[in-house]
View 1: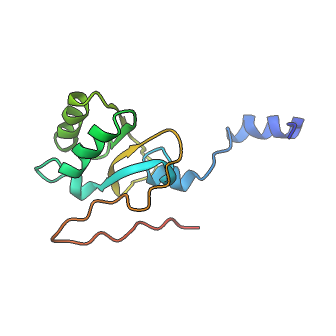
View 2: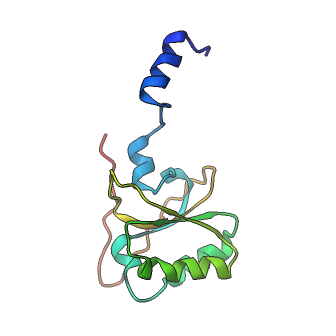
Length: 133
């Protein structure tokens, strides 16, 4: 599709159009279809590193670890160290306009369409996060 003058003017005024901006905000800048594993902010704040996350980082070392910058650094630093240990690229994502319920996302830059991405705690059940349409 060829861009028209109106398209260029609109992009200049409003910025580049985003695909699924709500989904990208929820999943710390990536899409659900690219996610290997995800933790909520409450899970990231726990004192331990989830073994499932460490195993997935080991198995998917080419993926990128996205950490929620709204979570205190003392909580995410253990995952930064785990990523460094396994030579996994990581990035801390901060979005001042939106608060995500997710604290950690390990994802590729292409779709893998994994059915189950959330780690379930034995004491609590995690309700899948639904995006508003």
